[in-house]
Length: 198
Image (cartoon, rainbow, N blue to C red; front, side, top):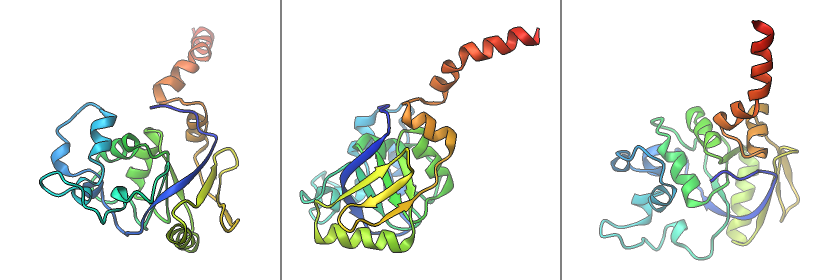
């Protein structure tokens, strides 16, 4: 669902695992779906870590732990590696995450997240380690992601870092525009240009 991004302040769900690939995010057997059904993909995010083969929840997995909730996923280094399936970003968005914080993202997955209104925030490994420590000590600890200022702040410690964000994608996120919406927004300018070119 397209929503305008401004300041996101939320508790976090920690996933302190490195090299989480897209097959772990959404297993290959779910790739037969060619349309984006957010509820379906959200229900199957990290499917094989969340559920046993009979469909019962695995109690030890963080998404099944009632202590943790929020709009922000804090993940280990090299998140979204592996195949370039867009379904992985669909699953993250479908679950309800607005932001994923990690110290490194696979490039294609990072772009897929941005295209599906999930903000990937890259932080230093030291800052990421601090976030995991803070959340472990207090599952209700909050993080503020300021999209206009491009900063992320651990509200428990007060520590902030800046993050990079492409200017075009920043504009689209802040105005709830996908690529088609953006082109439609420019329609009058395109028409004026075409008239001048004739």
